[in-house]
Image (cartoon, rainbow, N blue to C red):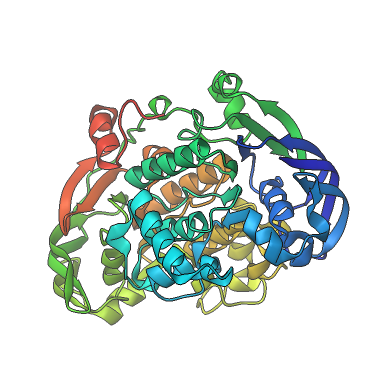
Length: 490
């Protein structure tokens, strides 16, 4: 059992974008699955940090009240002891890796608690088989896709066999099939009597697993729902609360009126390789200004590698790229394109949000920076260091740079990862506005975002491009299938 008693916490200085929490009184019973939801920065992650000891041991601030696990006070508990009771899967799995290969990473935690070698090997094998990730065994972690890394982060915690599992946005980088796998993992944990807390924006897959849904706003518990009560919320009420859909069947593609223009970008018979191994073969497509092309497919299918090649960042390929019928070399594609990476930490360099928006960009004006920050809701953090922002705010900073730089081809890799409904809608609107005189590609597993934003959808699978269709309600069943979702998906 987890017991929050009169908890209040305020972060010290500006080390976190979250406001902290206040007046938290909550009991999570042993074996219960509790979903924490609410707008970005509402306090979801703060509650998980209070359970795993990151607050106050690594995130200082003003803390009052008590947090107990089975009548033991967490706040005075040694971290090594707490780690045997509580396992955490963070939103960005890269932040919790200690090894470079899959097997060593899964075994790292149990090795540190001195599990005998025979038992360690048995636990590793059991974890690989139980979670059906045998195909990832022996691989280099840094060669995995974002979704595959998320699976390894979960596996490393599962192998420890703690009583309490904390998951922060566990589905943010997962495709439809992997979300089903995650759902099955959670069912296994429930069958084993584990206690589960999940902070999540993507809600639809959890409502037949969660026992209670805790909605937070401004650092406080606003209301606690049963799954039945939560499902009964109207769409308007849910959106007003800043929440994503609770039922995929309620989401439908928006068919935007568009003028079919002459193609300006042509990809002709492109094949990609990584360390001489084929990734994608014989890819051909054309795109016009105004196209917003959703790029979907299973984790590890080569979506990001293709778009890195399109931007001149990956050089192991054959075939040709053309712009207005002229062949384009790597340096020409680099000058013409801008990519918002899945992990935006790789592309934030300046010491303030405002400086980041003009860093290395010729011709950017203070007025344009001001207008862009205002449109993205970033004016209040303009003087903050980018590394102190939440994941969603960092994403919006990278989007701001893409708006200011004036490039003709924009690529977004999972732009809605970790975003609540409000922020997703905001990014969707901005991308549609940007597309008027640009070609835009979006790698995503976010069906809500695809339906609201994209004009076309292409799918990569089995080392090639299997589909290229227009977004329309007539193609809705096909779109669901291409994204690994079914009409009975909940």
